[in-house]
Image (cartoon, rainbow, N blue to C red; front, top):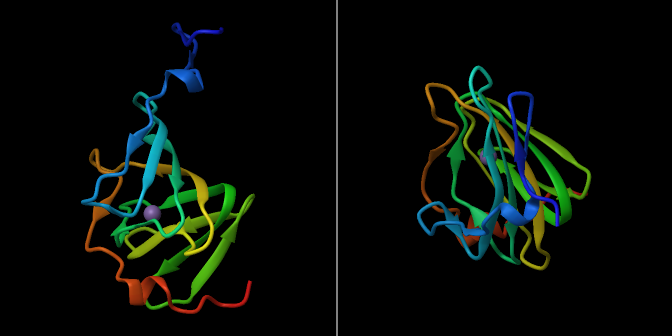
Length: 145
Ligand code: MN
């Protein structure tokens, strides 16, 4: 089996070398598994992670100081910015969350969803976590796909 590799030119981290971490209950509702967590060395400020949401699982409300790109890689989920409609998001979709906007993302109540999250840091911070998304907020009707 190929091993992870690192020299002065590059770093290759094999999927098998990432631990699957449980999303903490302080920031997620339901079963969430995180893997592929990697932060590029300075001067880059970019970090990435692969996030797996089981059916019914979602993030808490949160903001990103300099925004976030999501790439849906499997399944169907929901994404909502506060005060706006809840959107269905599907494999291959890209979502940009503007700086400082309160939002949440996760699976639907009937399907799991996996996305890649690409986030830049500001003063070492990539996210500010807030309160849980209530069932009433979570289950509101999405806009038509
Ligand atoms: Mn986010």
